[in-house]
Amino acid sequence: MANNSAIGPSICFEHVSAARGGRPVLEDVCAAVPAGGNTVVVGPNGAGKTSLLLCLIGEVPFSGSIRFQGEDCRDSIAYVPQSLALDRGLPLSVEDFLALGCVRRPLWLGTSFAVRDEARRLLALVQAEDLGGRQMCALSGGELRRVLLAAALGRQPRLLVLDEPAAGVDVSGERLLWEILAEARIRQGFTQIMVSHNLPLTAHHASHVICLDQRVQAQGPPQQTLTADRLLKLFGVPIHLYPDQCFSEESGCPQCGAVCMTAEVLERGDFARERHTSDTMPGSTDA
Image 1 (cartoon, rainbow, N blue to C red):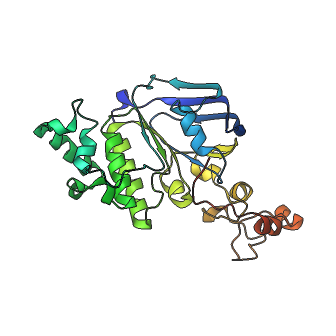
Image 2 (image 1 turned 90 degrees about the vertical axis):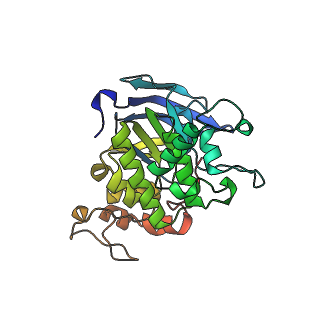
Image 3 (image 1 turned 30 degrees about the horizontal axis):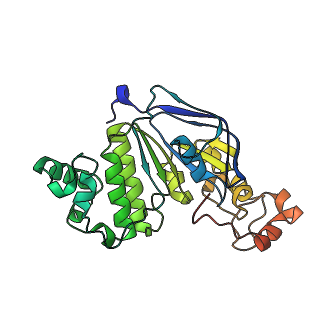
């Protein structure tokens, strides 16, 4: 059970705008991240999802404001990036990597039994106890993701920020990662905000969703936010997550028959044009 007296902060984005490389990536973003919840940011490639996280952790300049309510946790934010570049020749074990967050003296001077025990405890949190002696450069994508998550949890964060934490991970590994995150958040009571392209897992695990395409297109509980017509407008392809949002009088998808779009869209012919001109599918990197 989470300790409600130590629950993470809520966050309020107020009229946040940002540019990268001279190109606007966020425009007048107003959004809320509820305290202690799992907020998931979804949207097409280039929508500014990663940029929003980088503004939050202070890595990208922006106009507007980002306010923390409940507690100012700027010194207790843990960030799990979309990728980590490793020197393939660096002889760094997983335990040594985790020890970097626990000690201040150089690793070549050795680490104590207590530090090693802490590294093993963190690996147990992410169900990766067998990885301690492995070299970082030899890990698979899913294994590396769990080690990065272990390092983030070791900071005892009040706010956990994750940018596509399951990118490059297979289906079972991604589901396991979401379950590990849910258990850790409930146990430690932090607030979580993450970017994801996995809409079914978002629908299942998120407590709050922000649909972003440079501006906020919608936000709120998943079932009220991830509606079929809204996802069609956001991604340009039919995506159907909730059967109870299906109405028999609506026209079905010409490709698969699923009821995923409004009659108005079909009458305008926008779907066929978007399918022909857009390759925007939920799935890879973001600005």
